[in-house]
Length: 230
Image (cartoon, rainbow, N blue to C red; front, side, top):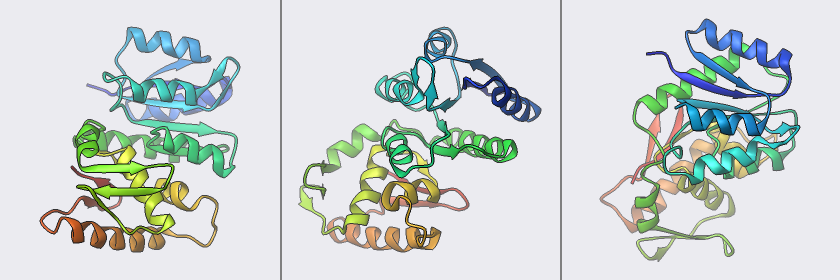
């Protein structure tokens, strides 16, 4: 059965281009112009993935993203955010709220379609947000103090390591791309690369193993990114 997608985009020209690119790959696309319409569609249909624009006439796709992540029946749905804003705060907020990927306009419809298919593959492999409750029993995130404990033992994390692990914790069980992790921990630092993420993940693994040598909490998914498994 073809995957069903909800596209929330108020620009008809962009919506037509995106829908064409996705439907050409055999996906079923439902388009909404407004946040209110998208909410109504989600009450009537089950969607396998959401593509949400940030700026809409009646609100923000971030509001819908927040509701999706807070509802048990929709918490595991992959979400790709679209935005005309390239500022760090927009990307970081979307990722902190639980977005799986982020594209800034203008973008290539082919790239969007490729990212959508990658997210669907990850979801099909069973990497969803469901294990997050188990993560809460093992990890404690003191957001105010930017400290994380594993099994009651504080981890000696740098600022970047804290941001990486906190982002992985908020999406425990989901695969996070290197781009998403870069945006969450480094923002617009142009000197940071995928290799930077790999190096910090390696250090994070070592610090986690110091507390719990029997487990490897962070798994690598070649060509896709990293996942916190609990």
